Each structure stands twice: as structure tokens, then as C-alpha cells.
Image (tube, rainbow, N blue to C red):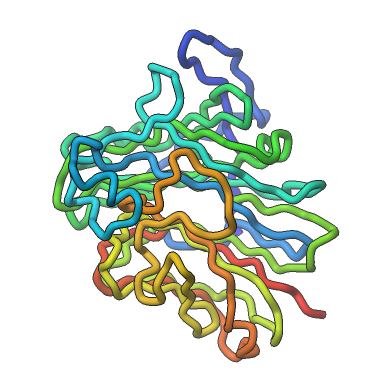
Length: 347
């Protein structure tokens, strides 16, 4: 598993409030270095009674001046490259240019054992955003004020397919453990607005593992990296072996998947996953799907950001004769950022 030096959280000066600085670790990590390719590796693993939840949202969408923007947000097939894109900004702070909210929904009495915030996007569209800002965002817990979060690990940063793409992440376990369920706000994701053939896209996902004695014993795994998916590359991981009859679910975070452009799939133990929101051959279709939770805004079509959770469905009934997790795209110029699984453990 990857080891990071710990989270860096600081109270941010936003709006009319100047808040005191604080640190969650004794020493600050060095500035995160960027790498053109960040191979996937296991970030977290545990066998415990509990599971994984996630909160996620987009940071950019089509401008409402486009006649078709409203229908596309509701789910009409389109691509981000078809639109002049502009920031989502739901807070009332004039000093943030993008912000969105999503709910972390934990079972009553659950204890958080791992929480990591991931964010990313395209820096080059109608404007060019500076990569030096990739490793910084603002986060506010339910009812709380913004705190600055600095990436505590390598930042993936690639220039390909007309895009200048990145993903960053930080450990926020203590903050989520202390603050718990509710609507979380993330602002200032370094995303470029405008229009280009590559399209504008970006967003954030908060992945949270928890312990709850009332739930089944499960094997929990989280992998992260930053890899281009373009028909020549795929992400293939040695996932858990699924006992016959076991239940569970799997999740992904990916960037720039276009709805209606088929040929992308998420496979667990040899079975391609799907659900009502994600066709088997178009899982990178700009959706935030899975267990019901609140989002602000709650667009069914995110125009280039995927954060999905799938039930394993028929996979356990096959008895786990194959093992592994595979995310692939034959046609979409997409980027993979996170994969996770939670599988019932049978003694």
C-alpha cells in the first residue's frame, strides 16, 4: 500500500472571515511533485465489519445560455466538447470560482477508518490553468467553514488528446471521522472553462471506509493512480477472490467519459458490471451513480465526470473462478483515477 506523510489541512481565508491556521500532522509534507504517469497501486486495505461510501460532484457544466444545456444536464446524450463550459458554484462566497456539495451518508454508529479526497480536471480548454494550483482545494464539513487541503501524494499530470489533465488527492480521515455524515462542500478545483474539442471537465470524490459491527465482514480495497484510457491502455488490478454467494460492490472515479460513446467497461472477476445508469459497454458516461445520496447540484449528466458504485450482482454467483478488476476504454479518451471494492468475506 502507498504510504503518505499525512494530510495537510489548513483553515482557508475566504469571504469576510480570516480563520486560524491549524495542522493535522506534526510536520508538513513537501510540495507534491507531478508525474506524467501515476500507475495504480493499493492505497487502503482492511477486512472489517463495515463498508465504503463516497460523496462526489462535478465542478463544471455547460453554460445555461446554450438552448440545449438544461436538457443535457437532465440526461440527454451529448459531449462536453459540444459546449462552452462554465463553473458550478453553489456557495455564496465571492472568493470561490467553483464549488459543489455532496453527502457522506454513514450508518448510525459507524466509525471512519479511512477517508481520502480526490480531485482533478482539464487545465487547458478556452483558457490555460497553471499546474502549480493542482494540489490545492478547499473543503468544508457539514455546517463548517472552508479549510485548505494540499495534496499529500504525487499528483498525476498528463498532456494528451488535446487535454492537460491531472488528479490529486489527500488524506482527510481525521476530519471526516470528527465531522461525520452530511453535506460536504469542495471548492477551487483547478479546472479550465471554455470550449475545445477535448472538452472541459473536472470534479471531486470523497471515498470513506467505515467500521460497523452491524454489517457483514467485508474485504475493503481502494486503489488509485492516474492513467489514460485510449484503447491501448487499461487498468488491470489483482482484486479479491469472490467466494461463491458473496455480496458486495465496486466503484470507480474517471474523467472525460462521453455519454453514448460505447466501448468502455468495468469488469470484476470476469463479469462486466452495469446498472440502470451505466450500460455494460458505456460505464464512462458522465454519471454519479450508486446508493442514493444528496448532491448540490444533482445533474444526472455531469458532462465528463464519473464517480459510480455498482452492485456486484451476478459476479458472486459465478463463484469467483476468475479474479481481478479491469477498467478499459476502446474509444473514449478518458482518464482513470480511483477504483475500490467491498466484498463479503466468508470464513
